[in-house]
Length: 247
Ligand code: 13P
Image (cartoon, rainbow, N blue to C red; front, side, top):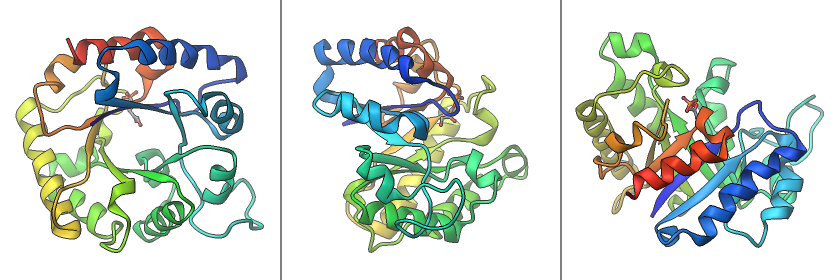
């Protein structure tokens, strides 16, 4: 199974659902549709309406983040996994670098993953080294830490996907080489296997993915899918990624 996840970040208003309707219509008729899943993470403001609309359709809806504890609390602006699930969403991202930069610690992220899973959300756990880590050849140790400090062997591995997003690649057009990405993905899978035994979890790549460079990524069979930012805000660009992946 492959995954194409569109992370809208701070983009979208109610009528932006038209973008998703076009993606859904392509997806429902695509001859390859059984080989992959499409998940979109719009902002909190759109979770309920979009989740309701796509409930019986192909696209799944997820949130971009969640609070790390409590069903309800007095924390201004926080949204709990319980509230997200009740709004109808079925996935959540956890640990996106935007949120790590804002102060999400590994301890908080562990609680987020745990709490989201316990509220029946599937978790897309994001990891990735920054530019300095890469320059100092710390990529492997940073990733190892981000995984082992957060993902616990007691978690239900069937509901966890890992997304590798090198921070220096997000929104920059800069990509890892094919070789770099292959060995990094294999390293991530090895670390995950050490925790969960047996088969590894799906590992996605994110960072400047578009309809042109997907040609390079599809040759790396270790990658189970993609977390797509900028190109997910246009139905054409998002569909082109899927079309070119299966060409
Ligand atoms: P871009 O595809 O815009 O580089 O964003 C990647 C990302 O951060 C998805 O979560």
